[in-house]
Length: 106
Image (cartoon, rainbow, N blue to C red; front, side, top):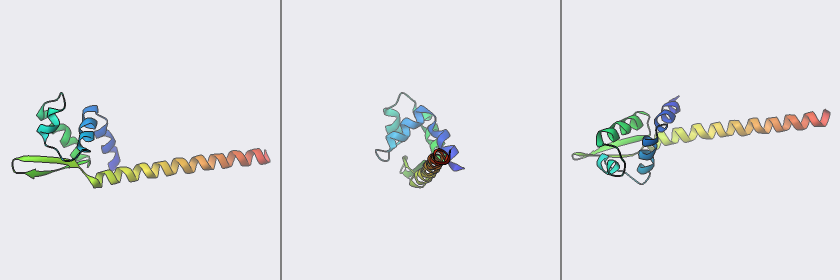
């Protein structure tokens, strides 16, 4: 259940903010830290959690590391949420059908 780690990682408000900032494109730790009231080491730790959860990846660019959103992780999370929505919709439709049947033969 990889999505559990993803939800846990996104449960922290600072990590969600970092995640949202990465939607704009790849960024360095310094660029992320410049926009947040958090130190570079703290941003690095948040990125590590997001990377472990499969939501973020990084690439070395000389001495810098560029962090970006990880498409495979986002796809897995989307697939989980889509399946959840389909199950809820099917359960809702089944309940409506049950209630209509009950009224009909009630």
